[in-house]
Image 1 (tube, rainbow, N blue to C red):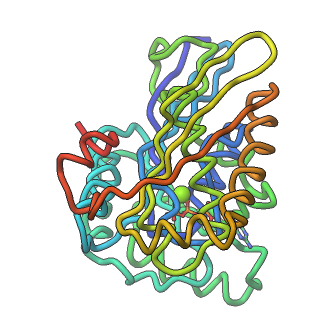
Image 2: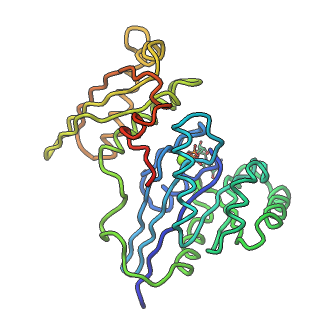
Length: 294
Ligand SMILES: Nc1nc2c(ncn2[C@@H]2O[C@H](COP(=O)(O)OP(=O)(O)OP(=O)(O)O)[C@@H](O)[C@H]2O)c(=O)[nH]1
Ligand SMILES: [Mg+2]
C-alpha cells in the first residue's frame, strides 16, 4: 500500500471541544482544554504516525469577533487553517446555534476540500434533538459529511480516523515519524501554567495573562524551570499572587504536578509575576510572545 499523509485542520467556535478532540485523536494531552471559552490561543499541531500514514492535525483558537489585537492574531490562526488543509474538521456541539457565526460558516461553505462536520457532546443530547440538529446542519453545509461524536468519551473518534485515512492523499510524510507536535517543550510549560490560571481565576484575569518560560534546564532526572506570568495591570498582579501568596502557590503546585506527568521527570518550578502594561493590545509585545501567524 502507498503511503498517505496530509493536513487535517480543526476549526469551530469557542468551547465546542476542538482541543479535547485533537488530544483524543493523537492520544496525548497536547493542547490544553478547559471549561472556559478562548482556551486555545495558537495553532498547535498534533501528529498521528503509523507505518503507512501520517495525519497532521492542527488545533486552532475558537473563532470570534476580535476586540483587541491578541484576538486578531487568534482569528488569523483560525483562518489560516482554512487555506492549507487536505481535510477540514468543522466542530460544533449539541447546544450552539448553527447560525452563530455566519461569516465564518460562509467561508467553510465555499471550500472545495472535503469537510467533515462534527457534532460534539452528543452525550449531552437525545436522539430526537440530535436528529433536528443534523437536519439543520445538512441544510447549512449540504456538501459536508456529518458525524455525531463525543470527544470526551471517545465516541465516534475511531470512525472519524478511518474516514480521514480514506480521504488523505498519497504522499510521503511531512515530519519525522517520531515527531508528535510542532511546538517545543517550553511551549507546553507555558500552556500548562496558563491552564491552571484558566481553572483558578475568574473574569478577565485568565484573558489578561501571558506566560513566558525564561529558563528550561533539563538533565537526566530533573528539569529546572523559571517562568514569568505577565499581566496587564498592577491590580491583576495582586490578584494572581493572592493573599500571602496563596493563589500563586496553588498555581505553581498544580502546574508542577501536571508538568511532572507530562515530562515524566522531577520538576523544579519558580514562577514570577510581572506587569507588561496593555500587552495584548501591543503589536510589538504580541510579536515577542509568538502570536505571529505567518
Ligand atoms: N459533555 C461533553 N463535554 C465535552 C466534550 N468534549 C469536550 N467537552 C468539554 O467542553 C469544554 C471545552 O473543551 P475544549 O476542548 O477546551 O474546547 P475548544 O473548542 O478547544 O475551546 P477553545 O480553545 O476555547 O476554542 C471542556 O470543558 C471539555 O471537557 C464531550 O464530548 N462531551
Ligand atoms: Mg481549544
